Amino acid sequence: EAGVTQFPSHSVIEKGQTVTLRCDPISGHDNLYWYRRVMGKEIKFLLHFVKESKQDESGMPNNRFLAERTGGTYSTLKVQPAELEDSGVYFCASSRDRGSSYEQYFGPGTRLTVT
Amino acid sequence: AQSVTQPDIHITVSEGASLELRCNYSYGATPYLFWYVQSPGQGLQLLLKYFSGDTLVQGIKGFEAEFKRSQSSFNLRKPSVHWSDAAEYFCAVAATDSWGKLQFGAGTQVVVTP
Image (cartoon, rainbow over all chains, first blue to last red; front, top):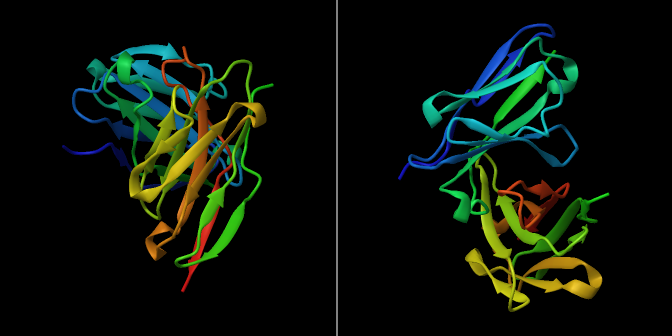
């Protein structure tokens, strides 16, 4: 089966612009997670979808970040407007269901650079 | 506050030598524990996990980890490293009722020399 895919692999934008990151989870996985690693820091949880619903968005840094999961399939994470501190690697992960929530499969990440 | 600490940012090891990566956590109750590895250009891959039971856990790629409750530690070991083990390693924890919300350490970069 195909793994978790993320697009783009790398994005360079200017401060104030908008960027949309996309994640395609493994087919049939209900859970989808977004994490972020800012340079030199640890990977931090952003939010968690169960199907199309947000289960936990406690890690979203501010209202410039908007996540959606259309029809419980792929997810997008939009940053608008982007700030310098948003630079980092954004990871997406998925898992099949609640019973296997901890069996997460990660994508390769999107490296976002805000200049 | 809850935290996960990986004291070693960078480790260099010779091929064939043993490897031990340290992880300590601070949590209200014993969480679930994980080790992930990220090779260049790849996503994070789960090496092993501990939920309960036997405190010595076997994982993929010849890795094992030992949970020590008294020390709040979950150290990762491999008896003999291969050049392909060069990667970044992350310790992670999750509360047992958290729906899989992972909290990561800062990572340890492992370099393998010939």
